[in-house]
Length: 213
Ligand code: ADP
Ligand code: MG
Image (tube, rainbow, N blue to C red; front, top):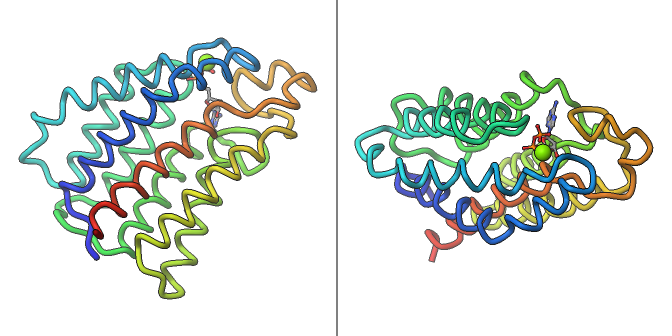
């Protein structure tokens, strides 16, 4: 199964839907260990991305994801705007000139997505950030694809991993971002960015499953 530019556009739309639906929960999570703006910020950004999709019709996958990243940087703000923005730009850079990608290429592009977050944010696994959901999810996807799973199944495993990994941030002490200012008091709360990251992975799993039908 190949992922087309159309599927990627649907991914962005589905991401916007899930973020809209979970906006309040994301903001509540951020209220506990941050400044209560994560859901609002991200929703504003993805609304802007969906609004811009009609202008992206002629773009290849790489250019479209780079434009998405720019749009997120311009509209989201906070820590997560530059982090997700850079992630999409890095992913786009991997897909320059492509209109269709196979599973291995998608895996490579998602590795670049995570590396984009890490280049900007310097977080590693266990720091209680979006990296805690993204990194294991992409590793799971990579292993599943490398061992012959079909993409819908591999993406489902990745989405389950991302969700469980986001929940796994609850006992962690935050070492990056605003939540780190709380020290020990950051323990016992789920990280909002890890939670939104799991939604982006879920959105991709959803559109891949839909496409495979
Ligand atoms: P802000 O903290 O500026 O209000 P948001 O509320 O939009 O930004 O996003 C907060 C989320 O950003 C956190 O839950 C965390 O997952 C993520 N984050 C913050 N700093 C970093 C970092 N250095 N690396 C990776 N992710 C980070
Ligand atoms: Mg915040």
